[in-house]
Image 1 (spheres, rainbow over the protein chains, first blue to last red):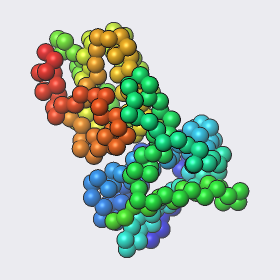
Image 2 (image 1 turned 120 degrees about the vertical axis):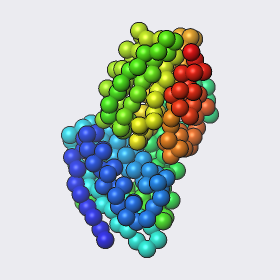
Image 3 (image 1 turned 180 degrees about the vertical axis):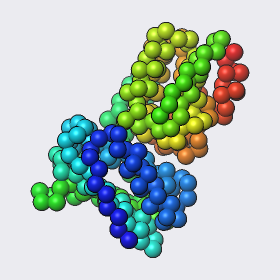
Length: 136
Length: 112
């Protein structure tokens, strides 16, 4: 069953979004670490949408859709902000001395680590859609 | 998120309750900046009641640790990190930058 909710792109809504996807993950039968993985991936993705696609808070909405299949849970995030090229985001280097590490790219790195599959689509009609799949 | 600072003889314990994310990091940054400037050199983050930490939170802790290391006389430590939260820190390869203790008692006991 699909469940879609729309949230204003503001950091104060991250907790509500987290609760929404957390409940869907629990209902799908994921264990504690699986639920947390989905919540973390979605939080990082929504933060990136607010900061980078919209360029700040209160500039657009985020549509969050959850779908449970027999073998997985699918989370879809849609925004209408600026598209980007995921391949242009470097893999973060954290095996560096403390003074030299930089924050860039950690969010996307975490999303990839937490989910089994992710896909970006950028369209002028339907906005930017990030589909994330986690196996049960 | 709720933040409570508990002063000990040789360290400050910062007890955090709830989520650490892009919404709550600015408040926590104010507290940590104040403690780095005016508090003791050892800062124990009591994470026992923390339910969630996003990368925004990890970067705040990294920034704070950088200041301590630059000054050369202090350290931020973690106590009571939930396994699922610690795992995300390990995934991004930042766990080596922090000393972690199972409990506040063991962290404070190690310092005092």
